[in-house]
Amino acid sequence: MTVLGKTMGRKSQIVYLATIIGGALLFGALINALIPADWILGKIPHLHGDGHEHQMMPVWLQWVSNCFNGCRFVLPAV
Image 1 (cartoon, rainbow, N blue to C red):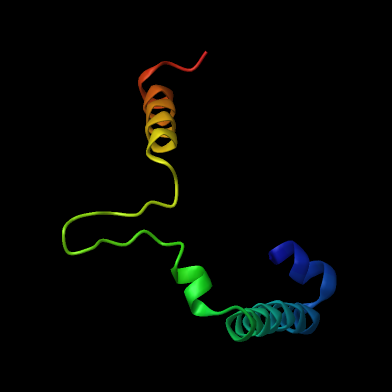
Image 2 (image 1 turned 90 degrees about the vertical axis):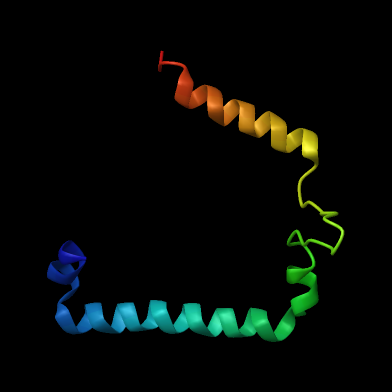
């Protein structure tokens, strides 16, 4: 940000950051307005009263990724 400020000037940097922040907020509001909440929230795992759980990823893929990540930390880097 300091390099950007020195290159563009302080006033231009503030306008640039305000544009980025405003665009992000506007796009977020647009997404909230156009995409139904159930479409997004329906993908999140949830628990039923009996402990039955729905997953976003299959169980076998969770195990494979857990083993892969565990091996990355246990084995020395080559």
